[in-house]
Length: 553
Image (cartoon, rainbow, N blue to C red; front, top):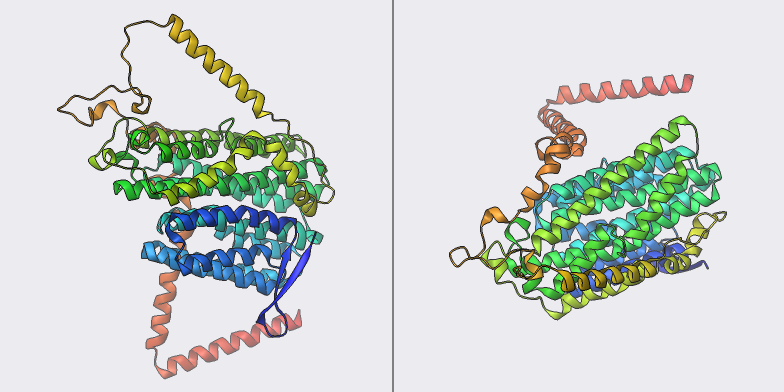
């Protein structure tokens, strides 16, 4: 199915062309529930929010370069206004990234199929997707706007940018496909995975933690796409299908649990006045329904078995293992290193999810505001529940979800060899229930009597004394203390002075170059008429000299 619809708005006599094919339908299905959830979280009356959503819809359904540029830039402009509504400083950084993204993407869409066009697409769309090394804006910009906007930026806008890479890399630029294209995506992806997971483990503010986790998951999707691109160029049909299935399933899962987490973080901040984990705790008792939904989404973020994030990462690791057996010695070493980094990042992501729930929602409240928190209103919970219900098929029957996505894989790689997913979570769920029932019966029947009981939400802590209403601070770990071992072992070596490597290696040099350009422009502005004429004459001579040399060559 590939239908093209023309709307007479845009270019004179041409309008805008919208395409409905399996790939665009998948991303429309992916975007719709999070748009609804974001609207229910307080953005239903925001015109800018709906313009943001419209831009994303146009970008994923675009059948012409003009439509894609119009939708992509509408998405960028609307999201910048929404970020600006929250905080001006990250909005300034974000608009710089948006300009860079457009400067790369626009010429790429009009170039013939070539490696140059692919590199420009990866730079332009990859910057908007938060892929390393152009990712450091994302943990600053995504937490700035209200929770409903943050949810759609993280769950939707990132996927729109990745959909551009998918369509251009697998379809439009397919005649010029080279194996090293996949290596570029995998390199950017694995760097994003490691930096994102490490920063998420070290962060203490909920929305910043979730934004860093988004960098990690954008990297996971890029790794899967890179594996598939490389395999497609080398004619490996089974590995192509495996990489695409893992990447697309990861995109679908992330589009559900990450918006839920952002909306939940926003409701926690609204109820307590803070999103710092060091000042929260005990929310499992005062906000049980929100906490239950957050726990479900955190299981996806941590890729736990029986959670919505397990099957995608299972497929990606399986694809990396299969790729490690292909190519020469250099490729084998490279894929072995890729597997090591993915394994370490998975452990860090698990630690970040445990910190989010264990420190923020279990234990005792660490402040009066956390102790007085109340369950949020029905609309926000309804949006979170919608996303939570849609996660269940991904968690329990991911094979059926993959079967529904088979037309998308065949569109991107017509020769891909699709294989059924060998993961059966329902028997695993039954086995887990049997173990839990058996353990409960054993403890009840043979457990030692006389032990002191404590509520589950208290995290094992008993009732605090009257003179310490929040308990002894030394008995409860903070988010900072929880991450301290990782900070000592890895964090301070990779992130010196708590700064992202991209800020030191990319943003700082660009800032210095910007200052030099500003000073040069100021000198030119203050120059005399003779100096300006001399400058123009020198530029003309250099231009004619270059023209003569090129013409002579």
